[in-house]
Length: 258
Image (cartoon, rainbow, N blue to C red; front, side, top):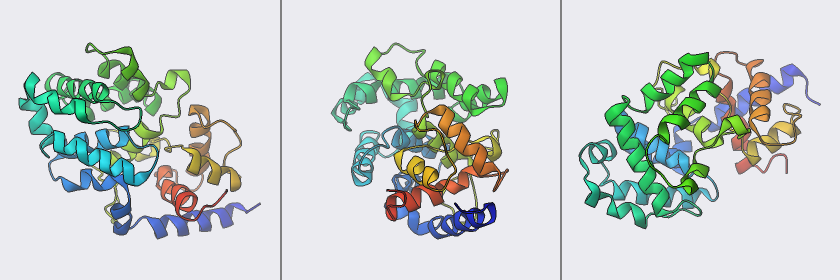
């Protein structure tokens, strides 16, 4: 078992190795990096993160189809689209995420930007309720599904009150909130501190974390995400989720922990 100092060295080394502009070229985060406008970046990042499971190349292809359906101008599309403009949405499919789900996502985002001040405002309002990402995610889900929607679409927005690790939403929040000189993440949001973020926990991150002795809980659920984040705060209390680069990178690219 590595000592605290050895773990610190390992995590910092791997963070520096993978937190580079080159990371963007192989990751779905390349999709929101196509845009410059804050709202365009938010919408593209949210939609991309929402389908971020499975093969990464497939995720990028599907997210690219999403952007094409939005005429590569996400915010303008949501502000001005009428019902006929949404027809293309039904042709977008990513594994279990069907055209019907994409349509609901677009209608909900339209509601959020027209009536709730945008994604930044919704997450910030939820965070203020209890100063936790948990409360932000609970509030966001309530707002997201205040429009009419089929029950099937609910599975595509994780419910942390039922124990979901909410990997994709935590990844989205990391993209929006974190910022450093590498420029991989956007750092567009300032109302949620990076110290409060929760690690995006998936099978790769969980496997690596357990191999390093950073995580004892066996299920990849919300309690595990909180446990791992608490451990990572011991190495950087202000920016614990920066070590997602280390845990995800070594898990995916190096097969660490298998």
